[in-house]
Image (cartoon, rainbow, N blue to C red):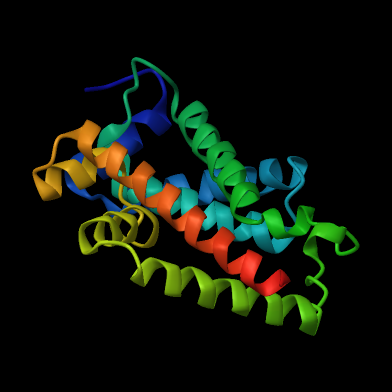
Length: 188
């Protein structure tokens, strides 16, 4: 299949015959032009060189995807180069991070009193869970510790969805009463 673009013919030879001479001719012609183009897009020399190599590897591997009816060889290769540059920018988001951004700083250490209070609350909740009937405790475990949705719990247990929801709600009501009773005892 001969085209008016001699470079398109070379890509067809690479695709159909894995012609290394055709590839070398394409490389010699396009590599410096692609590198210059990538540098105009803002890539440093080393990145532009690396991206150019990737474009040429793509040419070798995917020459069969080239369609001379849709684009010239130059258009196809420069589009690949542009896309590689965009991909590189997406991968290198670290350059966009501001080291002074407060969200990137580690959280302040927790106050020991707050940590102790959190542990006591956890212990109270664990103890309150043991006071629930086994069936309700198991539903709470699946929903909040295993992270299952109510529908998934219904599927796994064979219970109707409404029953799962009402038993979880009932378990919460019991937990609330137990925990409120514990707080009342602590206050006294």
